Length: 544
Image (cartoon, rainbow, N blue to C red; front, side):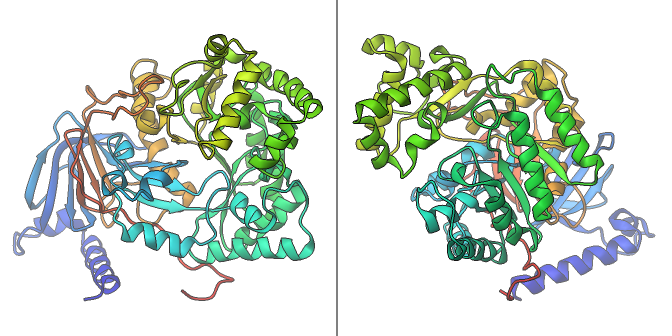
């Protein structure tokens, strides 16, 4: 039977059983029918179903790739029974903003298992963020899925990808024909199943776009039901300022006619620390006016970026790396760049706040201040040496940096908001790739109760599924896909830190992805049951 027909048959069977009084009711109807069978019974755990309800002790049963029972006492036998007493049983976590693409696209099958996320309890990752999502969504998703990956993935089509395809690295506005070409690429990505349109207006060449250009391109995603996911233009005081940037993002969504989702919302740098209440007020005002505005957040005080994005003025990278090198070779232009770098370094908290985290380099694990002292250079010149070497020899590698520039009070306040969900922004060299979800549990639920456990699970599952409109995932409900995590609350913890960013997390006793056992006792099993979670063909699209 074709997969689609089998899936519809299963849905009809579950629906009929529920309408007749539910699975438990069928078993209790005089014992005339045999108890339904399941593949796996997770018994006696404390169930957090992804919603806002009170947790309770009960059972979860899986059959094939679906959940077939959630309740206090499963009326069925199963081929495998897992004793989950004392454990947390929840939907598999959904990471709302990741750079897991490198794992998912790796030529190495062991990398495609995506253990960095699985061992945190994550079953689904969002990719194509910060404007980097390819418009070739269909072919790319099919290729990734066919290569066998460990987690589900949700693609976005990216503003940066389409702008670079049409305009390259140039700091200019598109002409009408170029704008039409960009719009067509976004429409293509949406019609092929992208969840929405991502942008990274902080990064060149996206930073060269004016607001009206972004609105015009975003509207192609809006008319096809897409979400606007934004790494906003300024999380600090680089250009229009944090609050000005929040207002711009909200305006883009309002003018394009689409929901707005802020990626890794934060107040970054000494100039804007303490502005979280004002950011929240802007978002709340938009929501009260009827606009759909949400955000994700990671639980770290250090952001992750690159030295060039953090320190160089945007005009210096107009045209890409080769053009930058020419400017650095001109004494007058170099002097201007160094002057602007001083201000950018100040707003980041100084060279002592910039930890170099690219793996495998002589400067790895040192602050920019320490490297500058070792090389007997001004910190600006040390940064330029690293940037130059990365362009000339390393093809852009080597400039990754963790920037310690956020205030704890801002992070705490944002985390308590009802429209916040969890993301890692996971990128290589920063511990957030391997440890975000257990870090949040340990630091913000267990040790410092900024939020409670129900909120932690909801911010990691159901609320995220609601924002991204993920079909039949994010909750423990009969008929939903069998993405289920079992966590030992006494052992669930991060092992990665800034000096050891690639240590796998511990404490996940079981993780099922589409019904396949992906993690057993903090060890990945090698299962690769992940799927591309593409949106159904929206309106204004040819059938696919």
